[in-house]
Length: 356
Image (cartoon, rainbow, N blue to C red; front, side, top):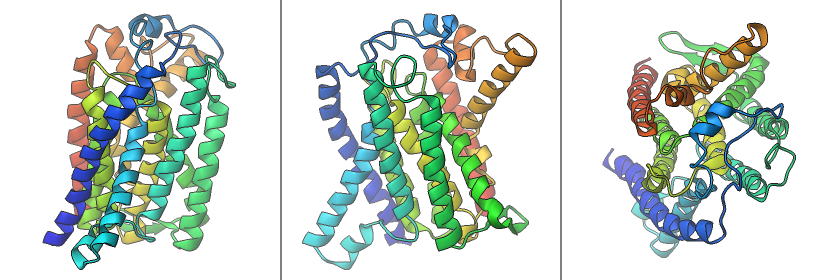
């Protein structure tokens, strides 16, 4: 038990301090090469202006670098290499146990974290350059959704064929076999979580929410004796906390797509790994643990549907956190209150996942 606790907290601590070091270097180069948007604001997918959003963010998107999310996947990667090096230099049982990379628990989420981060990095690079096929630069939404869909389908087939997973755990009921419907469910869950990545819109907001979510899944994994997965989740949390050190208002850099794509795709994998793969309920409790992401997606959907069929908006601006800004809430107040709600529901979801 003590060794398990050490195993999950040593990599977490390493990830945080390595992240601080990486952030310092990253911060220097992002400002040196002016890695930020050249024009503030955004447009809708149809090319229309978003006046309320643009007014709220007219001075916040120019002069602050993007790509800060690099450290969210770079820090766990460096942590892994450092633990490998320690295990090679000091080949003892204690040092070998610290290594949390395992075929059955962490290969897939680690690969997803890195691949998602690299794809997001390409999108950020194109946006900063003002090139690509999206309005204002970057990959179009259609292309990003296609990439996410292809990745999620590959992972879903891995779960279905290699891990022989075709059931979903329901608290107090047990596993329900859904057969090949597992594959489209995995796809829908992944796309839904990825859509929630637009919560990255206010200084410190996304980082705090994702830290609470991954910490909750670390707790679920630990109680299910998925120690390697718990260590991986907390290593990600350590990297996010290092990112937050520089992202709290006023932000020194933004997470952007390289961070949000890495985190959202990895979260989907972690949710399914803590599900019926190991007798848990990770997918069922996902809407509770990740409630802020769910509300973000729902507010966008409700806004689009209302404008299309009613001809008017429900919110002053979507997603929901920008609506609160438009009502006059200071950005830091929106962030803090989202953090409070995020932590409360992350704990609630973790409890349901553990006792269910």
